[in-house]
Every structure is written in C-alpha cells, then in structure tokens.
Length: 475
Image (cartoon, rainbow, N blue to C red; front, top):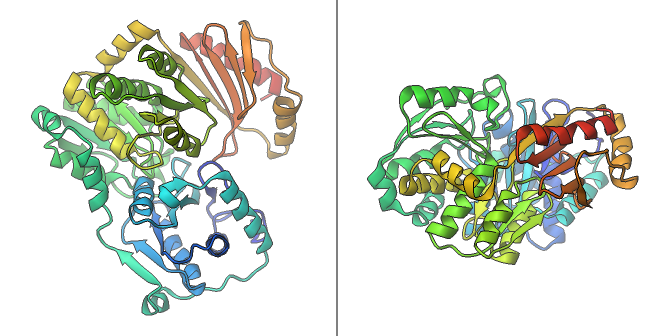
C-alpha cells in the first residue's frame, strides 16, 4: 500500500495488514491526525496515554506515535508494558484525559495490526470523530510527518512513562466483587490468554481472591499459535481438554487485547458469548439485586429480551459497534450490555468491553451458585433454547458495491420458509420471524468479510436461514 491510500476507521478503529496497510508512515499519519483533531477540539492541555498489545510492531508503533505527538508539542504517557485495551480505556477515564490510543488489532488474524482511538470518559471514538479523522488523514496524505525522537521528547517533558498502570484498575474491579464468596470457594481455574495482553490483571485479581490459577498459551507469540486470537469454540479445543484432564473448576480465555471472553465449564463444555450475557444478566438482576434493563446489539441473542421481560424490564437493541452498547447503558441505566462476539461491560465500570471484569463477575457467580451449565439449563427450561449460527464469508473486493446495492438499496430478500414479521436496515439487513428467530446480514466493520448471524430454537433451523442469503448474494 502506498502512503497516499485512504485510511479508514471501522467499528474497532483503524486496522490494516502489516507491511501493506500497517506501516510506519501510516502509523505516523494517524498520530498526526490525532494531533490535528486535538487542536481542533481545543484539547491539547492533557497528555495522551498510549498502550499496545503483544502483536508484531505494536510496541515500536507506540513509540512512533509518541514521536509524532512530541513534534507537535503534545505530551504522551507511554505504558511501559503490553496492555489490554480495557486498561487504556480505564486510564483515560480515571485520569480525566481527552484521548487514549491502543495499538492493537484485537481478535484479527496475526497479519493485522491497528490503532484504536479512545475519547473522554474512556469511550470508543464516536462516528463523527472517526469520520473527522478520516478527513484529516485524506488532507495530509502527501505530507511528510515531522517527528521528535523519544530521547528529545523525554528531555522536553513531552514523553513520560506510566510504570504501575494496573493498580487502580485492579483495585476498582476488586471493589465491585463479593470477595468473601470467591475466597471461600477456592476455585481452580485454567486461563488461556491466547498469547495476548490480558494476563497480568486477571491473574492478580484471581490470586488475590485465593483462586488457584494455571496458564496455557501465555508466551508472547506474534502468530498466536497459528490461529486467530479469538476465544471461539473451535479455538479453545486445547483449553477444553486441559480443563477436563486437569480437573479444573473453570476455563477462561481472552482475545488478543483482553476485551472478549470465552468460558469453559468443569466438563469441557464451551459457554458462548450469548450464554455468558444471559447468565450474568440473570445473576446480577436476580441474585445481586442490580435492577435495570439490558442492552444488546442487533446480532445478539433474543433470550436476553425474554429474561428482561421476566423482570419487568426492557432489552434495548442497538447497532453493532460497542460505542452503541456503552451509550445505551448510560441512556437507559442498564445493568449490562454486550454482543455475541464476546464483548460486554457492566454498569459502573468502563464505557467499553472488558473481559477482565466480566470474567471476575462470572467467577463470583459460579462461586455463589454452582455449575454455569446447570444454571444455563435452568434458563433454557424457562425461556427456551436459542441456538446461533454464524457464517463469515469472503468475497472479491470489487463485489462489495454490488452486494451493498442488493442488500441496502434494492432491499432484496431471499425466500424464507418462515413468516417474516419485519425487516430492519438500521445496520445491515436483519429479518425478524414470527417465532422470535432472526437472521442478520452485514459487512464486518473490522475485516473484509460479509457476516451472517442467525438464531432459532435449534442450530439446523438457524443454519437454514443463512443458505438463502448466500444464494441471493451468490457467495
């Protein structure tokens, strides 16, 4: 990719292929655009905190960013070790900073890296902010970006370091937990960070709470063991086997930057993100007394709607992108919000997804109530089974306008063997059926893929909703 090509921000920031899109010149361009944005918004009075995950080029990229900021007279605080994204969001809010930056491509394949922009209150940058960033990047496409070396930045007081970044974050999470119930149970937990940056805070939290914690895949590996660093069922095969063989009470996995969560029970059963959301919402509302509604995105289970209704509460549906989840929690004073891809957050915590706090609450729930699978069966007995099937479809880039036109302009629908009650085009095309099942088809905001999610009372029926969309779009 040449330096002049367009840099775009998706739902998780800017992401690109290393050596093609993600190169030093483009990292510097993004940093320079942040400087221009800060000046436009009159927010150059506070330093910008910069973190990075364990991907290839992440650490050095954080320094490239600091060098650009220093040349513009904008101070930065570099975190002196790899960090999960939730920590940078917390630090931005906790220290009342205007911006934070995390060098990460989250759960994307190892060929990718990227930069996530965090704004005041530790929030994901809103659409208007990322749109302005893209415009500034386009204006400066041919500019040679000035830099100031790290050493000179240090000497001028423009580059400083945060040497104990986790303390307040860990203490904040511990203060939210029922510590005594966790200490009394003394769980044995196997943790799989998937070679990512979420190791330190969760191990400190669990050891403080007297849990026994063992680790797998904790070494730094830029290839993430040859797979994507996402805690999906297929990627947690080793964790499931080790939990059973080692007699552990629970298995926990994070994605590469520590904001997505996967759970394995004591029998090696995978508990997916939709099930985690349902279990935690039910536990927080029914057992901890946290009253309020819940927020989910368009591609997340409708079981949450039924659980909320049983409490006399509402489940609010929002577009995909965690910024909408966190905004919904504020707007509706919701107990928690989340998405089927593995991210969630809870009222009173950061305004972004955090697997560290979510895992800690899940452990508290298990200590208080027992096997999560037993609890899940009880929810299914009451609210019915909800099975979700997902298809991630690759397509030639030149076909995207054609597919977009079919879905969103012509609004063509496949012929479904089910009663359609309504269709939403708020974010992609979502079809709602009379039995409360659904299918949604949309472009990924983080990868060059078309994603189709379908939920029904059984997996076969859900899969049957995906095939007609594939035929319609010829993918």
